[in-house]
Amino acid sequence: MSATPAERPTPNLQRKAALVHGGPRDHRGDARVAPIPNFALERTIFDTLHGPARYIMQARIGKEACWSERAAQRIEHEYRTLDAQRALPSIEPALLDFLARECNFDVEHADGSFLDHLYFGFEYAALHYPAQSPRPLLLHSILGTGTNTFAMPKEKIPALRALLDDFDWRHVEAFPSVLRLLYDLPLRRELRANLGRLTSLDSIRMHRVIDNAPIELSAEDLFIQLNYQLIHFIDFLPVANWGRYAGESAFVLFRDLLDLLSRANRLEARVHYAPSGESWFDAEFDGTAALISALLPSKLSETMGAKQVRRFSAQIGHEMHYELRFRDS
Image (spheres, rainbow, N blue to C red):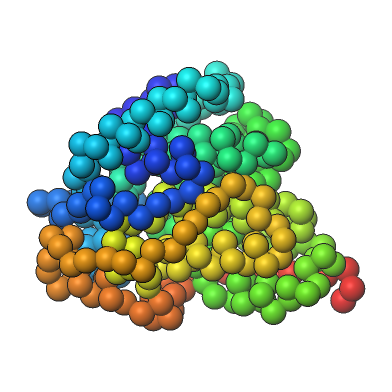
């Protein structure tokens, strides 16, 4: 394990900037991105990808940012100032012990360790979604990632459940399911088609990823969950050159979910986003895979993402069926 949950990881500069400003930024001009030599996808949560999706993901995440000294110093100063002004919520020792002893976080994420990713979400929620508990984002993938990796077996669910209150548990167990439903297309389409009657939405029924058990969220919890998901997507956005990444699936989902929550008047987390259409071709786009990844149309990217997530769910017997229940139906 690269870090224990009791050790608070130090965010990278992209994450520090997002934490300081309450949202993602296109750091074009402040950071140049280049491929990582001999990058090994098999060490990441994306090792289960196959075919064209694996080829494209290799190009998307096998990169690292080189920051200008001025930008790095500015972001570090802003983050130190922020850090001195607040304290993160405490995490119960019993929960930390469970994460350290009973869970496997050896697998890497798109940028750094999986724990780096988990702590970013926890810290961002504590800062910019203070109305709700940040713990679901610390634990959001403990019951499964979108690529069929699991930090713990389903047999340990009762032990984990005993460590969480009802609110945190509802959002932890639902997170992997809602994530897959967002990558698939029907849920977002149905929510948009019913923008005028979302005030009468009662609940959503779906299946838990890890064991296909039926679960349900109230409408209120669904909107809270969608705010958690929006925060989660921030950590998947490109460091720079956003104009070349308009079609990247996580970027498409982030923009669509932000717009959906705004139109529904249910954007509760602080997420500042300013589109950037400017970009340049540099070392980041060397190679055919990188170029294809950068120029992939949004609709094709969404379709590929939906097929991929349905394939992953089929492999583990997870049903993608869901049901929105309205009071006026």
